Image 1: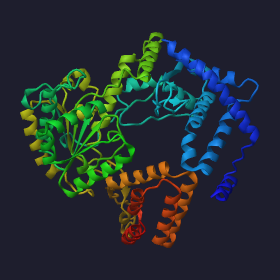
Image 2: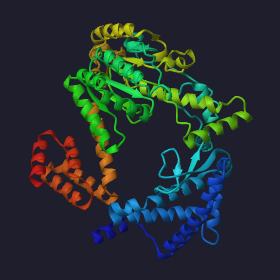
Image 3: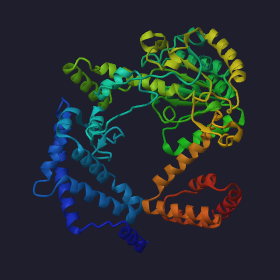
Image 4: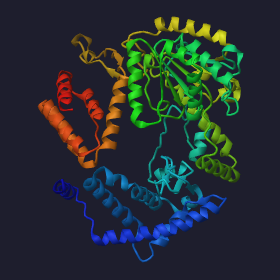
Length: 568
């Protein structure tokens, strides 16, 4: 294994000298001493600390040594050596160095003025690094966090490269004035288009009171009341019972979701009723169980028995997942996902927006930014229900605050344009009537959509023109591409996650080679032997090996399972 590692190192041209290691070690020891003093200052400071202070600290450690770009390069070489030669254990031990390297790269590539004005440094106790900030430590001890508070920094850098046009397109850019304010750029053209569906394809209702006339209000003070949680659950039961196939229920936070689910389970009746009408799944926080849960949800929906998935706004399910057609015939939203104001990143961002607003009145305030983040989280979750021009479904907003016009106007136009506030009894009747009609009216075959809608391709049979047509061109026939099965998407993502988490770079290269060989030779036994060799050299589990069978040729699956069982 050692000889193989050396070969890989030579192939990757990784060259780390003892002198390089000595200089890197000296820098890290100086940085550790400086960081301890800096951490003490941060704990005693009540004012935001600009990101430039972190760059100054790094420069102090570099006196008599070298420059930051060299440090980033050297750290990258060391990390490559650790990953190739040390396996999983060494790769995990290199996380701190990787975080430092990434922070140094950001400091190097950033304008000093931007670091002073638009970056902040804060100290978090415990492991609280996240994707929105760069942490100089990922251990359980205190961590330095460098966070960029202004989206315009990245866009300004792009425009500075001399690009002639910048086009931003997304389904969640609205409200557009706030988006322009965040980027601090004048957009000469702004356009908000209509949805590809007609108004009759979506049912949207606001309920201020649930079953039993209890007020539906998911504020922090109200959401823990037992009578509210029971009314909320009973309302979902009554409405979901009229919805076919898959249903998604979104809570504003993990705390709200776990509290309500726990109460339903302990109380008994609501949880039993939910599982009577549909099999209930709850979004897990652990990545290892996430894709398995989604796969089970998809299988239940496909079986015709129906399923209900409970998840959170701004979580894995609510953003980026494609719940096409019967995978989501209804979305329930139980509250408004306002960000946590106790999060230092949120406090710093709001303070930054207020500071910029004081200098330029056309920009948004911190509170305006805060509200927009919540509404975007709402629109992301609601968007799971309609995925193409022939889709249809229902949206239920189970919080009295959605009846406020100042909030409803911030919803996506395809929802706000048909949104009505109704009583519980009226909503139940409307739901039954809508799906009775929609399952007939909008269950049209996918070969008859409007030509201008959705992803389209030209039918090959229409490319040939009759010789009798002369110069007259026959109108092309368009058909929508059928969306990829939701379970296949999840399985592919799950496999990618396993490869990244359980295999080193060297082992991933070996897997890629084995997979290419299988595609060429169709030798499934040889492919399985390669996988089991990787298993003996890594933390790859037998359960993980089962994921690979979904990507074999269908006629090879039985042999793969037989060999796997025999060798287990």
